Image (cartoon, rainbow, N blue to C red; front, side, top):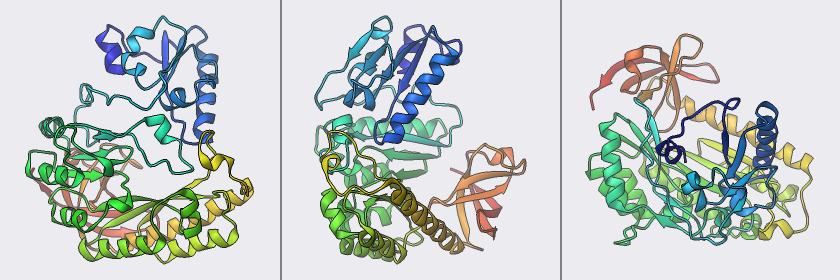
Length: 407
């Protein structure tokens, strides 16, 4: 959207002096909607004359909740935002056939360390808690030729790590050949790309023997995976219409560790789903407690109008959700500490970022997605450096640089 407006002669301003304010809004949770409302109120308070455009997922799914926006644009319309600057009202085409955006690298910042590259969008899973299939539409994928070309461009621009993202990257399929994600990863491994490729969240059902083989053999794919588990109770997984069991996940984690040394595995968990009583929550807690993973992302369940779960009975009280989130966050902290301690006195490769911490340090991430802090040196920024991890104070790992890697 920024590129479309710049191409039509507009320039970026500040919230206070803008003629038009564009809010590209999520609708995944009630918290996301509160953020829209707060930002809308703040915008109106500091700039009463600006026209406000509300675009993206919220506008697509819940256009009736406009929070006072002048214009609402859905996923088709937002890519032609320049046409709607002087319009008023809702411009949201219903349905699930949306395009993938173009021009994603037109405004690539110089020296950017990590680039998020959307290779796929949309989902057809319709899990009972999730509004995403309605918000993001049917699965569609970027052509392999275009991906290879952009990856080469990113390497030429000095990007050191690319995160391959999508709503459901496991459903990636080249529009022409039908080639899937595993073959795409093989192709990227053999072509000119930035030295690191990281995968975003991926359906555990896709992680089979073939995928693990590609993952383990790759010289570029980082040793980290993020899995949307959602619950450690088989009864809750069934009500969510997640198509796997805790036994499947246990075996999967064991296979990943067996084949990929030092892999960092993160998981999404939803607490407070309808019918999640104390017993079922404790099933989740104990399952995660005994699972060899690195970290957790924890979300209190948020009912989304239009989903099957939003009409389910046996709703969990908010105070119970908060307590369960607290318990799992404490478990997450223990998991992270245990994982960090594995790497003490080991040598790892990190890509330091430019931000300075406490006036002394810069941070870089290992292949396993562990943040490591090293003494700040401008020449290390956006390079790959070999670091020996020397200390851990219970919160962060610190290291000493051994050498720079020439790529």
